[in-house]
Length: 83
Image 1 (tube, rainbow, N blue to C red):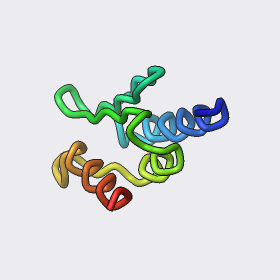
Image 2 (cartoon, helix red, strand yellow):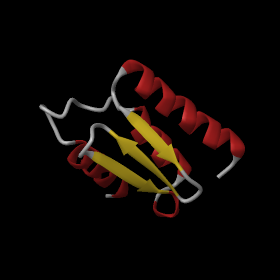
Image 3 (cartoon, rainbow, N blue to C red):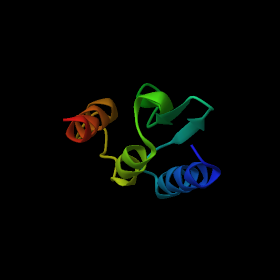
Image 4 (cartoon, one colour):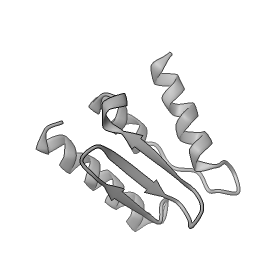
């Protein structure tokens, strides 16, 4: 992953935090953890997905927990790209 890809991912996630879609995120060398609330979140591992798939999925609007669980949402979106 290039530094430009990392910067783009961090910008997307920071915009999600600013707009209130997610509460926070944790960016490490091998994964990203999106945190929606105290008990809900989802982890993306970099070695499992390509950069373009990861950016495409992160650009999508995260639904409210009352509508759909964040984990279910991202699993469904990942399945669309993998299949």
